[in-house]
Length: 516
Image (cartoon, rainbow, N blue to C red; front, side):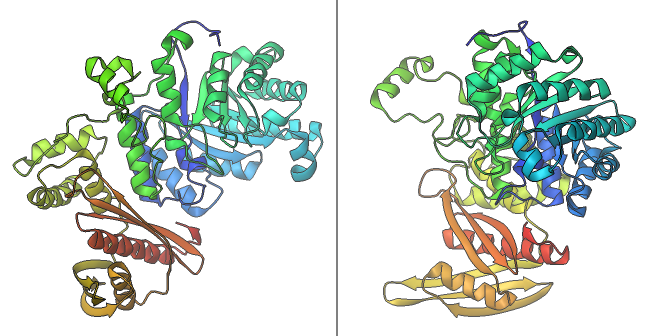
């Protein structure tokens, strides 16, 4: 692969974690969680934050509006179909952004035109042009996407792009909507667009690749090599079906192989790992251990040959450093003698922007943990923040949990809780200690929810490691994710269950159906 550009050009990073990433199973977030992610994306240095699809729901509209009013240094984009209602609603949501962008789209493949839109090619062009012109009335920053571009007729696609650029689009997006393309083909398509769209110099070429064949990142990189200067991607590669191109992989490829591509991004790579961890903490969807860049094994070396080489020179088997993505290599971060100023500094280094009240709550939990553990790791601090700050407002609060279990004992749980300010105590039996705790909590809260998922992960190594538990509950069509962390796995399980119940109650009050 050879680069076809002037060295050190900028590639814009368009993050769609809050839109495409959030609309996949298990990744749904509430408004405050979306705002927290948006703030982290701004710290990370993304150029454009696609905050959501404002017409989709009132909740999505409110989230986009709040993000637009809060974010100051990144552009904030709202997605809209190619119709007046969508575009007007998108502008209503993003109008107070420091740097607003309307992102409008329509399908261009004959498959979609025939079976979904039931329109002719000329009709689609008229709709696309009309949409861009309407969006242009609100802001000069208009992006147009030709959905299912990679299965579209190339000449027709070029005609569409030429028309929308004439209408005012300053970014044209080439989506591989169904993850169908392969790198050589996709790179050739970008080159074809450059050669056959006469006014292409007036717009930035963007790409949006899905991972159905595992080629989203490879296709995005091929597009950059052939002239694309914006990449649409998500943290951890989350997204519909098999996901999107992973932001962390694209950014670190461009940084590590500057000798090949000669381009830069604005991304502060030392904030990559904290950003990845934040998404995991909020969604409860873990990153697989062998995931490139942010996986647990990405910088782990077990082979004797590899270990020998690393001890002599890290460059033998590491092409990038853990520090370059914000992964600390020092084992002990803070301890029981650490003060609030040191704690605040470390929290900020991990990429979190907490209020004074949030810092006080988390610091108290940190001191409690430091009294029990000899070493407190970054992952421990991140888990505490997830538990104290990222959780839903408490309707139910776990005060005390006592579990009796053994080979000759019936598992029994005694639970003390605060339910809407009232103290409640009860006991119950189960098939195991966790089952006993869950059944007793369910009895106290009078919930009829169904447990869909229960997963336990060790946050760090050692017998004194905190356990992180993720549960997924469903009740009357609403699905929620809860998380809890503690050195005691049973307590972590109970905290996760109560966290999920709080989210479930919050969803009921908001009348939210589906994933929440």
